[in-house]
Image 1 (tube, chains in turn orange, green):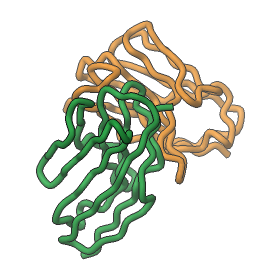
Image 2 (cartoon, one colour):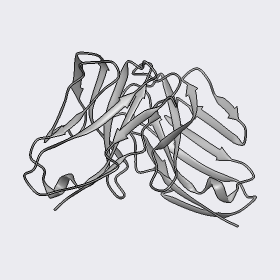
Image 3 (cartoon, rainbow over the protein chains, first blue to last red):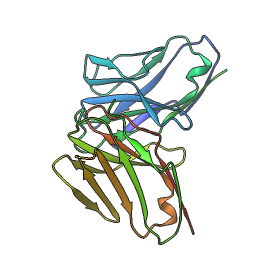
Image 4 (tube, chains in turn green, cyan):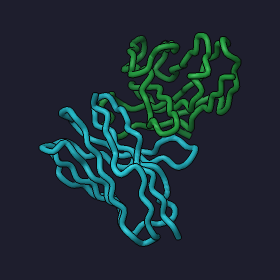
Length: 114
Length: 107
């Protein structure tokens, strides 16, 4: 089924550990992005990419790294997890940054840092 | 920031009633999008309205856009229990989101 696939769905980390959240899309979308959603805060943009090899920072990039080596994949790396990074993470993709046909979101990764 | 701000924060209505929520933003846009999020799920795209459009319909959804006031509204007619969700607006170009409007439709 075409769409955005995020793995894992749930993860518990200890403070200081590192991990990678995976995001893959099979719609040949150029634009991909990562958001975090905290209660009452809406979604905040972490990083985004307008195509393979191109990434840029969003509103809250500190503590996260991204890379875009292929059109399909856009992994998000937590370098040294902190309790403040406990959140739900969503990946989204679209044909273009403007999103003329809307953005497609994954089902999310629920991360808890203890 | 082009983040949209939704109003009200929460809305409770009876099934069959209409639900209206508003979105305000600060800078010029090319388009504005509305999304729905059911509890614990990802966002789902509902409708996009371009800056040169004033009104758009999709099924039971009606969206208006007033670029002079930098505001948009989403109307859900004849609401159903399945419409219970959070609704977000996203002004274009950078797709940032506000806190959303939480809609509860009571049967």
